[in-house]
Length: 635
Image: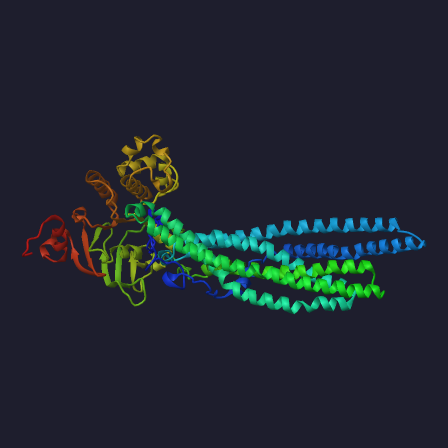
């Protein structure tokens, strides 16, 4: 496994926002402003429903449990009303001296109610238990999809989007979807079933009183519709600003040394407070608008409740219904408004769910890398890759990161196998871009790059990158032992292989001086060793990978002069028989290169070895002399 496979690319964002910060869409700096609506909430909910595929049997069982639980609960008030009617009848008969209360009948009613409510409780437990399993599987599926999606994303996406923003979608947004999905599905089933059952039971008692109860329903629907319209954009904004907050914290924490070095703590804090202010405003408004829904619907319910009591009393006096029927109907009235209020509340939950789901699916719908061709050379073609010679050809290559902005112009060169090619030029000339094109981090706009005469697009990316060993100026080490970090270059390497690679990279001596040697645990970001030592470890990793082609991008920039000389000797041995590309600003390190490509503004302006380019007296000579001489005024 080559070093290049795990080298992280720097984000294109500025630590303090502004151009290139990649902080989302809409508003200044790409931020979503309060009140901005989602692109496609209904579409996001449809995609979320599709994620439930394979869970329909479990959901069906949840529905059955919810229906049974609701039915048993709904029948309860009607049965308890029978007991009330019997008590009222018996009490009246007792006063008249014609009888008394039938306590056996009441006992039977109580036992029946107890059985119904126990069964209802069991059904509720089962539906919650099964639904929790369903939502956990959906959550697992979403996180798995995101994880796999990340591996298929083009490098350009991560150059423009904060890593914290991506992490927020994996954690906060998926968790929001999970929690709300569990709550909303069960509540929808329960509320709808309760509403239907209550309406049926109310009609069996008194159609007139049922009509009065229904009179409040249109007003409830009007309130719900308008509140949803007001609160929906703020739920979306809340999720967006939460992602921005996570992104800012992650960015500032990883770059805290730079922030302190430039005394930018106040600016960082001010920007974070601005994000928090937006988050607070969006969160406050979403909660305020959604919060007024319940009191308003409850007020309408209480008005209907008063009217029911008045009409019910009149009907009882008229002898059309019993006293127990009024008691049962008032309970049903309460149960009638409750599911309506729950459905209104679910609408808010669905808004939050849809807002989070939209961000998740927005990421999953991002454009992916161009798929490898079906007939591409892959690592399974072991014999082919073992015989790679390392001839590299750039054939009229044109490339630009943005449409219409070409930075590599008609670039053509042929590199013979086993040769060392140095790429030099001022900052922004396109040196590192050449390397990114070689590795297929980006594909060329036109032209072709070939290895042994084969277009690199005819290799799978894994196969292509396995040919390369890469050492970058920006080191990357993970939390693990030193031996494991070196072995990352070839996972099947023995301890002896690791030590030999370390010796070749001049790293063995300093490792032996550490407390636990090769078993020393590197801390987060390997902050317990120096930058130069980290660079040595990445070079050892590249040596261990034993690649066909080497790429060294300022690989010795973080070490002292003495160590640099030692590393150059190790690299000279490593590069024997291998095609090597070396990007260097210190031109003294590439004097022995077989070929030097001098780049300026994306073009190769000069080609040759050191002596030939010095003799030519062109741009390379100017670069070289600017590092080692002090030009006179005449120069």
